[in-house]
Image (cartoon, rainbow, N blue to C red; front, side):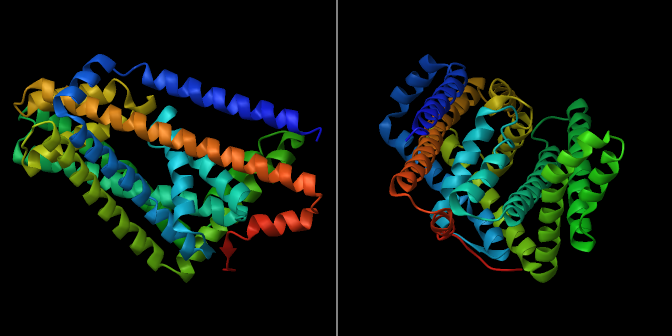
Length: 367
């Protein structure tokens, strides 16, 4: 009973932090223009778009779920989708909307579903590597395609675009090389970390080695073993990623259609490329950068810049809804965790019984 006040305090602090982050995010949205857009479109198109994006947010857990199964971790798809939605919310509210929620994914797998650290870290790392690979490939291909069809002009614009494509191809080559090395050898990052520790004083070396290097070695070994024993998970993950991109393009087309734009494939790809470049910047939710990218893209494509702004406003309404949903899921998970722990104390369950209940949800097969 004496441990409940700290948990209540932690709950209050978690809720306050979530509200603060949401306020910092939502205050940047132009609500006047957003409400005007909603009035002009009417409720039905907005609800259709929001429903489609909620379904997409759930669907996009498919690659991570498949990777977990390929690594011998069998969790319900709904549980994995909830964890990914919470992690996506963390990424949206922190600098760099593409990354930031990975620790939350690992924590939820380990704390809420009893998944061991090695497959938990390995599945998240491999999921992000595959996502980054396909995103960079599509970005480079999209830039080259828009330049080829002349969507963004000629001359200086083409030279600038080619530099962007080359900048995307360079990290793409590095990511592909890393995947190949993980398949071939494994423990490359671990050996690099251990070499770096040699320069540190001994009192610092031991705790860093036990808390950082050991989990890193275990996760790298797990990735290496999974890639060797089940290489098709990479192929399946890549195919799922390509399918996810097809869904993203369809979602973008739906947004442009709802605000009254009738674009061809080249114009849609031009808008998408501009948006993807903008959200790579280390800005929460790409605030400001995404707006500028869509207005500039509309101008380059010979369209009224107001359409670009209207498109972003629709995206921001979607982001607000998905952020609220993710915060609610995080709060529910937090409350569920606290309630279960409190109930265990009240019933006087042993630590062995608690561990069995925690691990019942996930079935982990040995590699």
